[in-house]
Image (cartoon, rainbow, N blue to C red):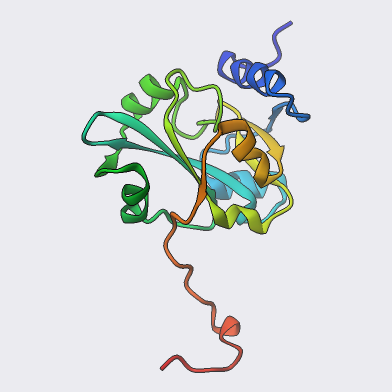
Length: 174
């Protein structure tokens, strides 16, 4: 009996093919946002490996950026790594290129392989959770597994985090 949606089955099969030791897990509720996923899993927001799809303007290729849930992508940095201007991808583009709906885009098993970048900030964690093809499915992995599973480089593609007041150790910024 098929226990996963078809898109999650596709991810599960790819993870198995790539010898990843952890199968997808279905959540009780939707995890369309990194915060929803973190809340359901009981993990830090940064441990959610969110997949963001952009459209490279020069050739209409999908660009996948996998980053920590607590970071924001710096589009200029992404453009420097992918060799051209990027734009936001709408739901139709995401579904057509990846085979997944927004909120469930996995880093693997895409309909058409995207240009992929993995943000280095994910390496802060021992375990991260990625979408598994459906807004209710996720799978755990070590951040370095993302590079092995996707073949993508680990680079800096996020905006600098805003320091919390206690992170300044009592020093005032000049």
